[in-house]
Amino acid sequence: MNTYGLLASLKLKSIHGTLPDKVHSIEQDSRKVKQNSLFICIRGFRSDGHAFYSEALKKGATIIVAEEKLAIDHTKHALVIVKDTAKALAILANKYYNYPSKNMTVFGVTGTNGKTTVTTLINQLLQKNNQQAALLGTNGMQLLNESLESNNTTCDVLTNQKLLHKAANLGIDHMVMEVSSHGLDQGRLRGIDFDVVTFTNLTQDHLDYHKTMEHYGNTKGLLFAQLGNNLTQEKNAILNRDDPWYEVYNCMTPYEVISYGIYKDADFRATNITYHVDRTSFTLLSPEGEFTVTTKLIGEFNVYNTIASIASVYARGVISVSDLVTSLSDMDCINGRMQKLEIDAPITIYIDYAHTPDAIEKAIASVYPFKQNRILFVVGTGGDRDESKRPFMAEKASVADYVVLTINDSRYEDTSSILRDMEKGMQHNNYVLIENRKSAIVHVIEESEPGDIIIIAGKGLEEYQIIEGKKQPHSDKKIAVEKCAIKYNLNV
Ligand SMILES: Nc1ncnc2c1ncn2[C@@H]1O[C@H](COP(=O)(O)OP(=O)(O)OP(=O)(O)O)[C@@H](O)[C@H]1O
Ligand SMILES: [Mg+2]
Image: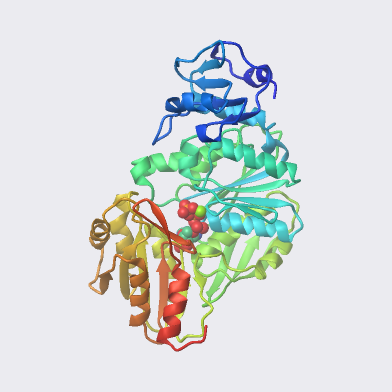
């Protein structure tokens, strides 16, 4: 791309040295720099890109964009000094990739829990109704038949633009994105022209980062504010009417709000809900009339997720509610989210991803309606992450008859201290602490009796554990299936 055209959108800049005519890529990671790259120095949490400019030069960068003077030979390379490299990166990346989100319908889903579930449902609803859609979130990117891994629920600003550009080139016209509060706070969504933004719920998580719930909630609100103020476009916010943050987010956008919920009057409202071990049914009251909905997703929280996704797709006005309800009925449950294992044993096992107090409460509540014998609950939490939620997780887990406290990913933290933090919240004595996650799962199945329901929470279908910074192979599902086969003499 022409360098002068690219840099023209930055007002405050000083240029030292002669700019090359063309830029062949923009990079913020010096390891990815190629010949004629523009390298931009971003101050991150762990490292500061300003420390890597000489490596970028060695690898062929011809322009360095930075916030301070750097010892660069201006006869060979150009230095562009700007006030805020993070903002400059968003502006440059959007321009470089030709504003890919502008000509797409972009869905953004935020909230403490349910983002992966709702985005997956929206993506499937679109695809089942013959729309070209791609999904970007915790499980990476699903683009046509390709899956790309991602390190975060919300990628960095450059990756987002690259992926949107790639999708646009493949003719994808709907992008469904999970939007995390970290992503919003760090400006990773800057420049994305969202069309439909959806709020699931807000409960305690990430207080190591946000410090207060108010800051956490307001950060999520950026998604609604960033929908914009240009009423010539048709955009919508889809908000959970039963969540106290509804009123706040409603005020943050000038666009029409479509509400959904169960308890308060909402545009999309679920009533007459019946819960089964492998499905949920309810009556949906909608702007297009009443429908009977059946879904393989279980629990009340998934009723919220289901109607949030119907309301989000409805907002585009292309697919009728009736067609959306029909599509839902033959959709499978979401991998690793209250996913019932297909085993021929006298017990029921769900693999779940609950790792917040609210998600734990909801996961256990979702099996209560068909509880016959006991509920056994295995739950872990991660090391080096929000410590303050640990006792509340155990408090919510105490609703189960028997609890096994264990570890998700210890990272660099001492495992026994993680367990002790959780233990403080236990409300009864029917629990054990087992640091090794595999042993915890084996133990709970050994303890089970016919009629019991086991929920193994915290990792979903992740296929690894991070211990001392290293990824080790691990699968809750595999361990559970194998142990079950031994305990109940099954053929697997
Ligand atoms: N609407 C909801 N309300 C409360 N809990 C939920 C809801 N939806 C899902 N959960 C619980 O949260 C867990 C994680 O769900 P999901 O992966 O959809 O959330 P997420 O917001 O994408 O999480 P993350 O922030 O880790 O990406 C589920 O396994 C379930 O236990
Ligand atoms: Mg997610």
